[in-house]
Length: 141
Image (cartoon, rainbow, N blue to C red; front, top):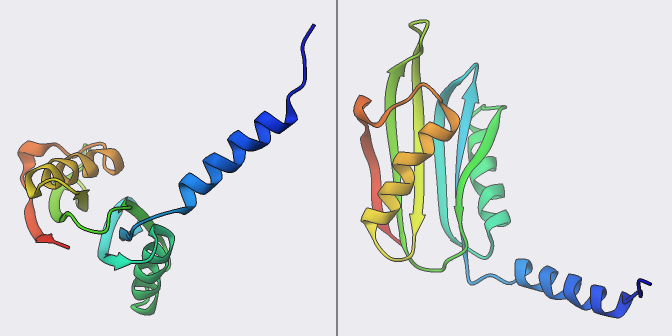
């Protein structure tokens, strides 16, 4: 026979909620996109929370006239490294695409770059590392 333990479940849920709310800081990378291509990128670090960082970066892109903006990477660490890269490639039907990759890591710039390099593949399936990329930002925060 199953027993109900509502107190235990509520305790677990409240612990999980408090774990996601607490943050030492926030950073985010938000990308404006249209028809499969990336148009612009905005990144923000040193903000109170990830949601505030996303909101601020989104607001900047929207003030520049971009309607379709999407958070692409984020960080909850107060200090670390951020890498933002830009790449151009052709789709399998020959259309030129621009993609951005964003990576945050609290240990090293190299680890942040590895995350940034894997990022475009998540959003632009036709992109491959061997197509190359330009580092827009490699900076500690």
